[in-house]
Structures are given as structure tokens and as C-alpha cells.
Image (cartoon, rainbow, N blue to C red; front, side):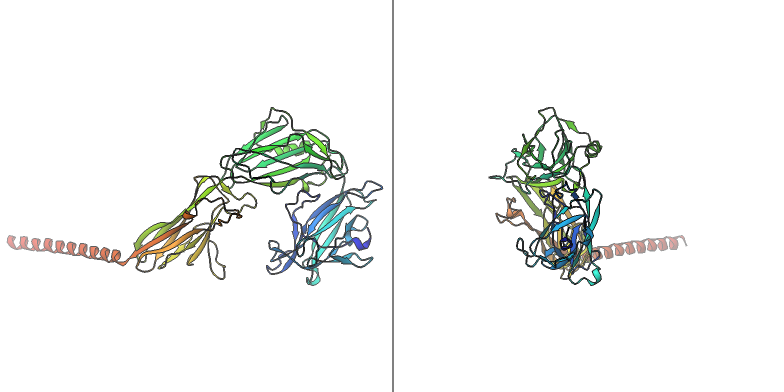
Length: 510
């Protein structure tokens, strides 16, 4: 590698499992303030060893910057990359947007002028050099512009490896003329490629389907598993297939009879995950775990070669892909409030309930976000003493912890799935501060009914808002006090009568 090809800066973006590199755990600029621009990058990258006289196969990194810390948004910016640590090991192919002086190991990359995706992403391609041996490694260092003394530098370790590297490719969203209906068959159109430099003896394929999908096939070289729901996760269906066919280096394969799932009656937003690795006894044992799988008895799942880019899996970070499956179905999410009353100064519990009336189960199976958020407006004349779990106050500074009381408005979020007939309940403890007659607050589901919205499955907007009504009555307290005073008076008169009778009895005896 020339010294000029030794530097650039980067951010890995997940969800690109179809590329030759799909990301290892990210290394981030440590403890940067939330307003800073930071670099995020893969902690490590394995590149195939060269096959003389040719260099090794290319690996691609999608890179960039984030504003607001490692979890912030992608942003334009300038950064440097120092790849001097890769000398005699690997070569970086610089994309447009990166400039460097001849003979320099440092490049400046400007995401503000990136022609492929302005201000967002930059792709670096890296391959091993002829003469580099398996096990050799070096580092690339990335530094955002303005970082004093490299304090926020991030490094990626690049290693040279030798072996098979089974890569999977699948669309992020299932492409179809129309979304499948409940009861339809969903075929998974993915491929396998051996991007390594050695033949893979076979492959192990594990396919996960979310709760609205059921494994439809019974291939003799596959096993199936239905996992029941738990407190933290919904039910799911999985398949584990062992392919004994060798995969040649650089060859791409498709399935003669592609794997498929059936959509359940309650399917809506579903997802499949695919993980592949080169076949080995250890990999199969890890995939099986302690679960009880059911073996299929049908025809075997079989690979067929298809045109494509030319021991232990060399690099296991590119063995995973996810496909979203949208099913043509509906669900009715409804919210109900409550009507409570009490004495001024006392506490009452006003509950807000979100119910899925089906027929579909509603879930976020991509990043695990809540099914729906509820906007709560607290009735006037009351104060929230304690907000329920899953609710946070809405205030200008937004600094209150979830569950904190005293705010006039709250946002409550459900878990990330609701089955048909299932409800989420949010009980608010309110203190009645003054006399009020049916003071009305509200609970509103934050649902967008636009046809292009993800939440357009909801069939009845009329039940997306409910009333929280509270009555506080001072007369209740007054009546209690009068009753108490009356009771004390009766007791006093009774005691006086007893004393008078005793005195009369003594005087007769005298």
C-alpha cells in the first residue's frame, strides 16, 4: 500500500448486511458531550488474505459523523483518517470527497461535498496487499475536525484472515406487487456468497420469524422451533437448516426452493432475521442451544449456483440480514379514560387504558419502539402525585425523570407489542386540590391516519381520544364533619343522662 492510501474517517451503518461488510460492534468517541460531533466506526475489520499474484478481496465500510453523541443523528462534517498503521498490510481505496497529499498517510474527508449521499455517508474500500500474511493487523485512526490533541480519536483494527466467509444478502423490505394477506405464503429471496479465500464445507442457516409468521416448510435438513411469549418478548418462529454443499470462494448461491413463512391471521408488521455461517460442529451446537427443535421430513433445502461476484468462518459480522414483511391487515387501537370523585385534599386513582381490538397484533419488530404513545392532559384542579411506569412528564426543559409528578401533561408509552384483546393500563395517582365539578382532562393516542403512515392500520379514529373526569367536593368533607360532631353530641348527652340517673338513685337511698 502506498502511504497516500493510508487514511480516511468513518461511521458504520447497520442494516447493510447485503454488502461484503456489515459491521462489528462500534467503537465510539468516549464520553463526548451530547452537543459534540463524534466519529463512530467498527471496532474491527477482517479482510481476506491475498491470493498471489492478486491482492485480497475488497471489504467496504460505510462511514460518517454523528451530532449529539454516538446515538445522535448523521450530520455533515470534516474529519481526518490516519491509516499509517496499515502499511504493508492493507490498502484503502479513497472515494470522492477525500483528499490527501502524495506520499501522505493522512486524508481529509468532507461529508459536506460527498457526491453519492451529501452530508450523510462515505464508503471506504479496503483490501489486503500481496505479501500480507494471515494474522497480520494494523489500525486506522479517525479524528473529527477540531478535536484537541486527538482526544476523541477512534480506531479500527484491521486484520488479515484466511478461510471461508459466508455472506448473506436479503432485501431490507419484502418487495411485492401488494402486501400479502393473512394466510399467504411469504418467500424469502436471499442468497449466500462465499466472500472468503477458501472453500466453505457447507453452511448453517438460522431463520427467525416474528410472532405473525409461521415456518411453512418441513425440509429434511431443517428443524423448526416455536418460542412462546415471555414478559419481555412476543412469540416467534425459527428454522435451523444445515446445508452440506461446499461453497467455492467467490461463488454466489440461491435456493432451488426458497424458504418460506405463512402469515398468521393476526399478522401485520412482521420481520425475518437471517444468520448464516460456515458449517462446523461448534457453530451447529451454538445454533441449537438448549432448545427442543422439531426435525422436518420433506425434501431437503438445496442451493444452486447463480451469477454473482467473484474451516472457520473468516468474518462473522457479515452473516446477518433482516427483511421487513408488511401484511395487509388492520387493527383497532382504542383508549379509554376514567371518571372518579373524592374529597378535596384526598388522593384518587384515574386510569388510562389502551386496548388492541384486533384483528391484527401490533408490534414494532425493527428497533423495538412502543406500539403507541398516549398524550395525557391532567384535569384542572388536580395534581399528579405519582405517574405510572412508562409515563414521563412533558415540560419545556424535559428534564424530569419518568414517573415524576406535578406536571400538567404526560406522554405514556406501551411496550413494543400488543396482541389482539391485550391492554396496557396507566394508573395515575391524583390529588384533588380544590372543589371541581367533572373537571375534564384527556387521553389521546398519537396515531397518524395518513394512508402513507406506518400507523394507518387503525380502523376507527373515533376511539383514539378519551376523557379523564374528576369531581372534588368540599361538601363531602363538611357532611363527614357534621356527622362526626352529631355523633359526639349524642355520646355526650348519653353520658349526661347516665350520670343524672346515678345521682337520683343515691339521693333515694339516703
